[in-house]
Length: 122
Ligand SMILES: [Zn+2]
Image (cartoon, rainbow, N blue to C red; front, side):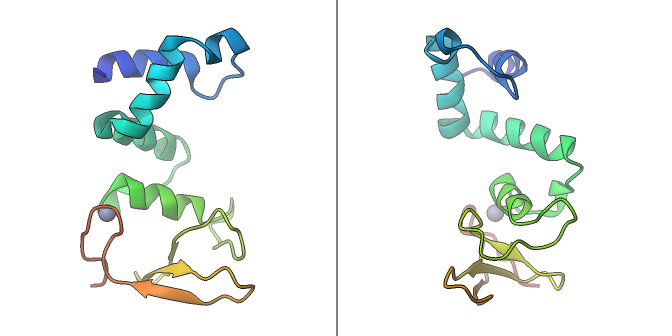
């Protein structure tokens, strides 16, 4: 999908309660597909969301990692533990890890971004 077209659909659909006939429409389906399948559209929409939340995503290797780190912290910026939705954590020292959801706070430290392959550790 053209990014301009995607932006137009995003303005109409994002963050709104949409009636069922809109959710069933081909335009909405194309919009959702673009988020999942078109990297340009995904990156733009994710940057918009993180910007709106005041999250400094520029320091991350890619928006996928930035978004997953964003999802791992609460409104106060504290790491969420034992949230099954959280798939990656970041520590202040610049370390990244995959949480082990076994009730403890254990993590598997990773050195490369799972999405773009960039080296994470300094
Ligand atoms: Zn990355």
